[in-house]
Image (cartoon, rainbow, N blue to C red; front, side):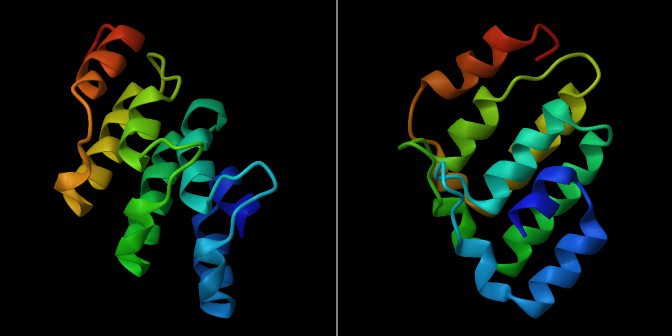
Length: 123
């Protein structure tokens, strides 16, 4: 399930979720959840929009995904800190919006807005 989220294959994510819905809450050996893998795939995948679709699907399936932290970072902070460039910044902004819309209270620090701005000038 984590690999499917990482590879940006929505049909596989959807199929595996139907078989194993609890997989949405399983961490990898490095501590990331499936949604973190989807976010990471934005910057290293061929189809960054698929990552947005997967993140939205995971949040629709289980809204508590918004509380999944990686190394102490909130999901929103994690998404803002990801490495975006000109080819994937739109997908990055979309996934941040999806996460924020799912849980607006997730803004924890004033550094979130400045962090993404520091990483890409289009923001």
